[in-house]
Length: 238
Ligand SMILES: C[S@@+](CC[C@H](N)C(=O)[O-])C[C@H]1O[C@@H](n2cnc3c(N)ncnc32)[C@H](O)[C@@H]1O
Image 1 (cartoon, protein in one colour):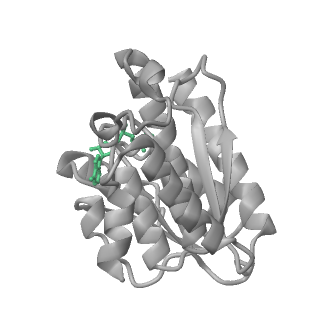
Image 2 (cartoon, helix red, strand yellow):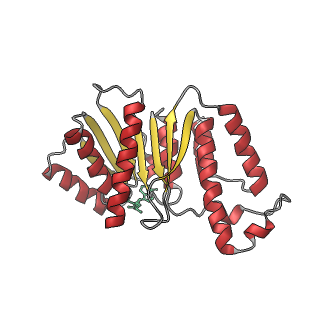
């Protein structure tokens, strides 16, 4: 649990700094969605930090497909009198809240991370903070396209690691192409988790959307993948 505790503390610290630097108004209540909230460790801690710690009003929802965890978290939120905090049992791809300021996702499995990002883009969220988890979509698609990848992808372990990086790069570029400035942050050391990249996206009118779109297409051409869940979700929303 020490590893999880450290991840949550760092996640909140980073979110805190980004909120302070953002356009999210201090006096307006914050609307926050946590995708793949699980047992709610991050959700409860972030809610408590914002309300008790910073005195901000906020409505926070955890979206989690496991009903038993949702019931447990809703019960706990009631016991703690966390009035603005609730949990909903549904798949991330089905969540469509009317208004969202911030989307967070800590190790939402596989393409649930893409669903979190797509939800944020569709809702025009000011911040999307996501630490991806396991990734299975891109690895089987990566192939030698004649750009010298063969030496990397013939070893299954290296191919999977390469695919993880390609997946996160693809996500970052799609977020930039959707009008976000993106930072990749190593938010905890690998001693605590190997899933230690936090993709922090801040809505900005200065994002270079055209360059990002070109770089995304070049990444696809070089590595040979044709299907990416965030891309499909964003296309469906057009
Ligand atoms: C690795 S756990 C992380 C839980 C929590 N964010 C944390 O860090 O403690 C991932 C959670 O995401 C949930 N999940 C996976 N795919 C999902 C989806 N498509 N929609 C909603 N929840 C999902 C799982 O049931 C699981 O509880």
